[in-house]
Image (cartoon, rainbow, N blue to C red; front, side, top):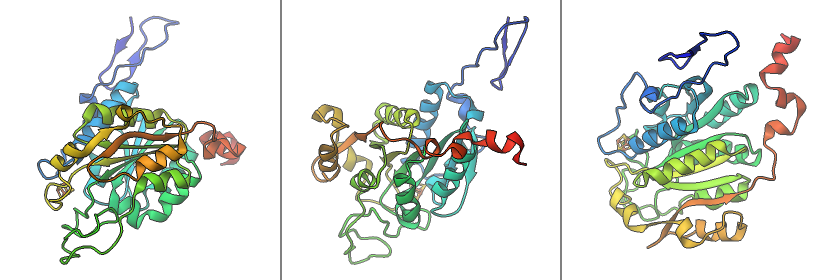
Length: 297
Ligand code: SF4
C-alpha cells in the first residue's frame, strides 16, 4: 500500500502503483512564523481564506508560490507554508510575472495592500492586467497605509482624516473594480473578510481562472482606519449573486463596481474566458522552464 508521508510525498509499496497525492490540510499550510498583525486586523481573515482555498483546491505546498511587496499585508508569504517571496514596494506583480512566465507549473498568488498595489505599484497593476498574466492578485484593501502608521492611501475616502490629511482628504480615491475591468483584467472580484466562505470561493475562482484575477478584499485596519471598520462593511456589503448580477455583462459590471454608499457590492463583477493569457500568446513564453532546460543553458 502507498504510505502518505507528513511532507505530502508518498512512497510506493508495490511496483506499478501510482503514488497518491497526500491531502493537504489548512494546518499543513501554516508557516513557521506567526503573524505579527494587530489583534483584529482583517488580514488574518485573508490568510485564513487563502489557506482554506489552497487546501480545498488540493494543491501541495510546493505547487504554490505567494509573492508580495511591502506593507503589513505583504508579510503574508512568511505566514504560509508554500514557496514565497517578499519583494520590493509595489513590485510584486513584476516579480510574479517573471516567475509565472518562467515556471508554469507553479500556481502564483500575489498578496499585498492598497498602498502597495494601487499606489506605489499602480504602473505594474495596469500593465499586468492589460497583458492578462496568469496570476491571482489578492489585495488587502484597508484604505490606509498601516505599516507607516496611518497615512492617506490611494483608496482612502474623500474627506478622510488621516495623519497626512488632518483637515480631510481632498482627493478622489482609486476604485480598483472599474479600473481593473477597463484595463483588461479577465476576473474581477471583491471580497470582505467578514464573509469568509464567500471570500474562499472568490479566491478559488481566481486561482482556477486562466488569466489575471483580481480579488480586492475589504480587510479593515483596526488600528488606523476608524471609518471603514468591520461594522461599516458588515452593514453595507451585499453579494452580487443576490442582486441578480451577470459577471459576463460588461456594462453591468462597471455600473455595480461604481456603487459605493448604503450598498457596496461584493462578489464576482466580471469574468471573460475568451482572451488568452500572456504565456499562451508566444511559443517561447509557453514553454516556460522547459525551454531553458532543453539546451539553452
Ligand atoms: Fe493590520 Fe492596521 Fe495593524 Fe497593520 S496597522 S497590522 S493593517 S490593523
